[in-house]
Image (cartoon, rainbow, N blue to C red):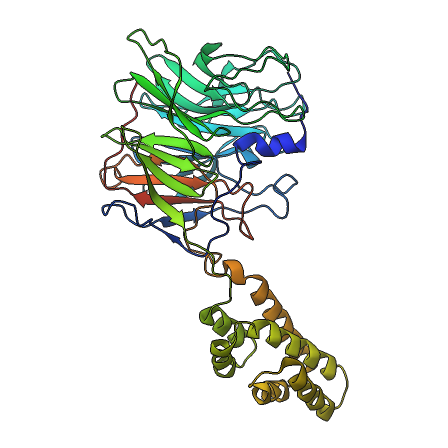
Length: 479
């Protein structure tokens, strides 16, 4: 089945479009005041390539969606925008990029989503293909991957609705089966080799007046476009309950499981979240949530109490002295403009104006005319540092140098809202999509996080792999 859906629907495909993003842009990532004292600081491991322009148009960038760890400490990260899975070693360094390269149709959001490592030595990956219009795309469903990165189709997934695509997403291991969330269809599939059936939830019959309203269902389609529902999955240690993030409804559901592996009706466990995505669990059965819509990492106790472990700081509305000092250094008058920064928060704009006017003056061949222009700027700016600025104009030796200064100042001004957050090496939560625990002795308390950055607040977006020490061992993946 190959189904065409709108670009708007495709943008919703990873649970971020149409959701109000909380908190605005950020300048620094930090642990919340409410976080436990045994929680560390966010650590940046790897920065992926952001898209060049719109993430919906090539080149799509490297936007990571899911992460899983094997027993040796290797991490496997799905990148649906490149139809790839990357491998990071036990030391968190990238070792195979890609580890798996699926057949790519170079279409938006056609590729691997959820990944999970089976302790028996296999890796499973959900694969979204029903968004493709190409018959060359890989089959929609679940793939099995060996240790050499070779893959084969494990089971196809289809909801049998020609005009409504399925979206296989996260994977959990239940005895001899896989549980796979379908974010568009609003169900949990039970998957075995070559066989799929609905395990929980209700498939829509296509009747627009009969869309399911159960807790597991996504919000109703808007203008014919599907919305995002069940997403991240997490089983308890004894497999007596499954937790499900419903991204579009901002809830986490609990589904109890009987001794035969059959589910009870889903119930809301936590609500009023931003857009919960990936889930993980520690040995004390606390849930860890990548809240995509709020740019937060949450911990939810077995009683349903929600704690913010990491989030981005607030943006300051005015340019700070430190930021202005940076701009001043670019205009070659660091000391003079730094003094002015303490007097006014708009010196960056004034300096840009002066530089541009000086550029115009330097287009003539007379140095005295340039100085005159600088003196004319005195009246326009009405600051106490006009003579200093005039000195700057006189210190500029060529028109080319002045033009460069103007461009540098303009660039710095454009970046002031994210200057602290936007630099390489600064850990920023940019639409976290998944979380999982490390598996080696020195990483069992480390929560690994992938930032999808599909509908980012930052310029450029910040797709990345990060980790956060949470002070409690993670629950090991078992069959």
